Image (tube, rainbow, N blue to C red; front, top):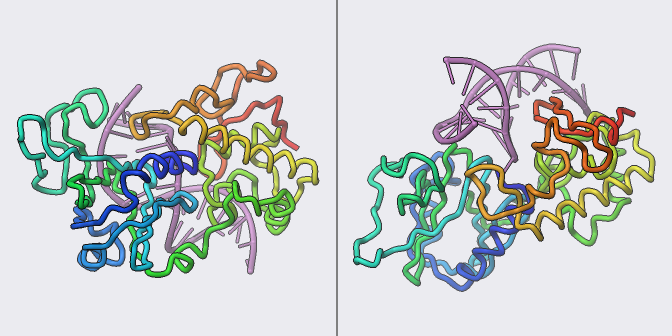
Length: 295
DNA sequence: TGGTATGTTCCAAA
DNA sequence: TTTTGGAACATACC
């Protein structure tokens, strides 16, 4: 699912269409994943204006005109889409009677829009300009959370790796405070917020570090390279509008620039050694065994 | 059919 | 106490 660069791209894309809009109605078809409860959130959002759309870690954040916030986490397969209200023939958009499950047609191939009707719709925002924003999520792992206290809701998250304040010394401190393998450490949102499986592998490759290295054993130069690797790969991915691997996230082209993720068996772009797939911390992990030697 | 999946969380074991 | 491994969540794709 989307990591920091994909979420950032989504936020930038929908920002001009959402900021200043008023929410007429919010309806979730998957109350289990809506906190603190479908009815409460629907009531709280009704009539509110979206004043700002931002990102924190992998959360899309709608800041509302009463100071409250709506946090959307896409997890593995969530997407934000637009449901265009009227077809040219004046036929109203199909409401999708129950749970928004796939309406038969357009089953084979193609993006969810091939049939004109998005699949797996879990929540809907009706806006004051007649447009409808949809939260679609095949796997139902996504989460929508309403809060009056954004700081409290995001208190557990680590620093933003692209923030100015995130200096090499900051990373050094985070790494030295624990003795964990680098890969699961970097994936831990409480340590650093926003990295996922793709960009963790890519950052470690750029730093020339093996993903199973213990975090407290890096010297200052290695920390500096990792810091650089994280920031460079995230910035390049944002410029590339994220990584498109499968049907879940369209529109990006970072996949052409990946060095190790998804390149098992292909030659390393630096040294030609075939890329190897490992399992570390239950996650598929990709390395160049020559550029990222173990210790 | 079985294995895998861009994520997070909870629990048990080391 | 900290770290690691496994399972669970629910579905689609190869």
